[in-house]
Image (tube, rainbow, N blue to C red; front, top):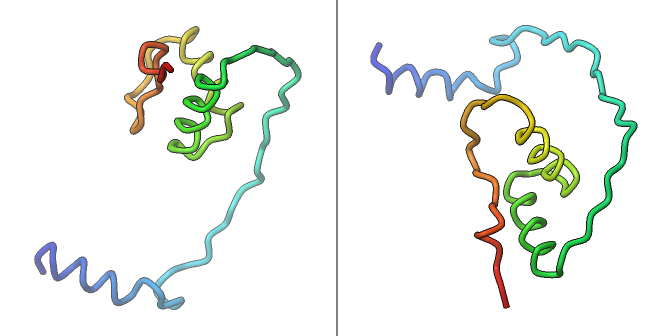
Length: 92
């Protein structure tokens, strides 16, 4: 069976409940965040940050937290959507 035939076969079976076993999910552990940081942005900066966060499927808080954490931790794997740098922010 070649790759195309295998893909077609898997596509046919994807909704067949007899093909797939029950998935056991573990408990969801949510981080408890206890510190708060406040910052002020211009309207243009905020719009740029909101736009980039939305593109990544994150809230503004998640996006900014990710930026901050990545700045102070060792290099990590490449992200699918790069973060916006200050020089990329729109100006009026």
